[in-house]
Length: 364
Image 1 (spheres, rainbow, N blue to C red):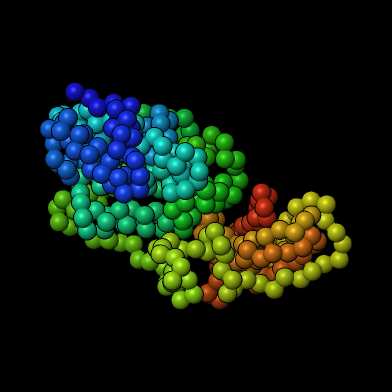
Image 2: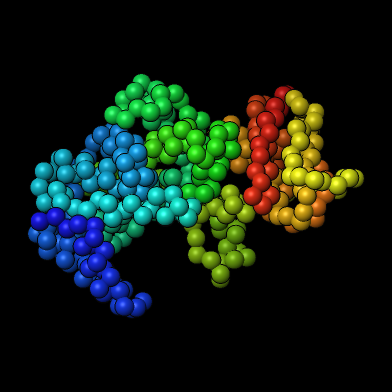
C-alpha cells in the first residue's frame, strides 16, 4: 500500500511537538514507512547505470524541480531495476521542497539535497557521511553543465529536449543555489528566468544524480575513494573564525577575499545610478583600469572571472563605500599573485541588488 505525501507529512506532524520530540517524530515516521513497505533501513541498493540516471534527472527537473529531480531519478532507476518494494511505492514527492535551494530560498542546491537524501536512504553512518561530503565537495569544483550533459543536449539524447545547444560552463565554488545560479547567469549573460538557465539546472540535476550513482556503485564494490580536497583557504579562514563557524565551503565566492583586494581610488563627480564602465585600455597588457559608480552608500564587490566562471581576482571585496565614483586597477594576476594567461575575462560588480558584468581581453 502506497504511503502518500499527505500521510508522510501528517505522521511527522503528529510527533512534532518540540525540538526534542522532533527526533522521535523522525524515528516514528521512518518506522512507519519501513513497516508499510516491509523493508528495513538502509534500503537495499543495487548498482545503477549513471547515464540512465543522468537522463532521468534532467527530464524530471521539468516535472518537479532540482531536488525532486535528483532524488526521483535515483529512486526511479532503482524501481525500474528491482521492480519491487520498497522502491515501487516510495513517495518521491517528499523532496519537492528543496527546489531553488529550499522553497526558493537560495540555500543548498536542490540537486545536492536530493542526492544526499538518497545516499542517506541506502547507506548509514560514516559511509553515508563520506559519500554525502564527496557530492557536496565535487559540486563546488565541477564545471556545470558537464561536457557529457552538454553533449546529450546537443544531440537530443534526453527524453525532454527543450534546448539543443551547448550551454556555458561554470564552476561556482559554492553549494548555495543563489551563488551557483548567480555566477552562471553572470558568465552566460542570461537572466534567472531564461530558458537557458532552466536548462542549465536541468542538466546539472542530471549530472549530480549521475555522480551520486557512480560513487554509490563504487561504495557497493568497496572501491569508493573521495576525490574532493578541501581548499587551503578554508583552513586560513578558520584561524580567525574557527570558534564561530564550522564549514567546509570556500567563503570567498560570497564574501570575497579581503587579503588580496586592490586599492580603490576615489574619483571626482557624483553618481545618479549604479554603473560599471568598460575597462580601459581594452585589450590590455598587463594593466587595466576599471571604474564604477554607486548612487548611495553600499557594500561593493568587484571581481574578475575566467570564461568558465572561476574566480580569478578580487578587486573590491565586500567593502563599504559612500555614494560616488571610484576606480580600481587589475594587473593581470590572480588571488595568489600569479600571472594569468592571455584570453577573455569578465569583470563583475555587485552592489546591493545591482549586478553587471563587462568583458575584458588580456593580450600578451
